[in-house]
Length: 191
Image (cartoon, rainbow, N blue to C red; front, side, top):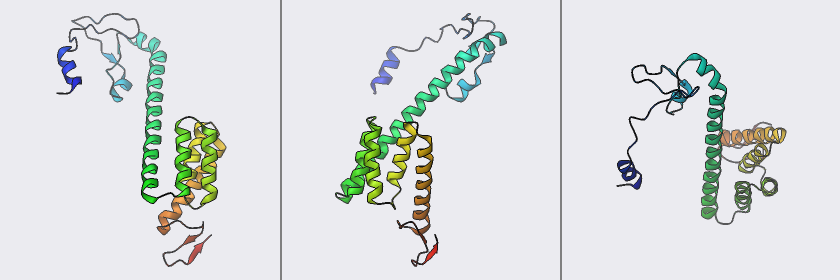
């Protein structure tokens, strides 16, 4: 059996623990349970914060809301790191399977630098990859993430537009092109 479950069996939760108001810290009377609960806690899967009265709810809400926002940021940050590492793993697999493609080597090097917090180094590697192959969207996407993470909103928007343009080309043509829309026969459709 998993250690987590063994530990839970050895130390079961105290089901008789007193519930308290998150505002005034008053204990919930046994004969009159608190009716006010934080709906956001319930929606997000937390044990709901309890309140004995509307006054307590109103007074405690700013601090409790801040707690929710902190939890949301922590979750978002963990998700971003996970996505970055997942992408790095996928690109490392591609690199391993495709040999020593210089483009993917630069993209992976950029992702490694971004993962370690070296955004300047990441930008340098990703720009080299962009220059090497302007048709592929991966370097543009990861460079956009770099700009976003370092607070450079205008550059972020510019790179996201390039990512969308390049992925649209791939989706429409089934392959990487030189920036022109072509039909499946190779005839140019529009610029």
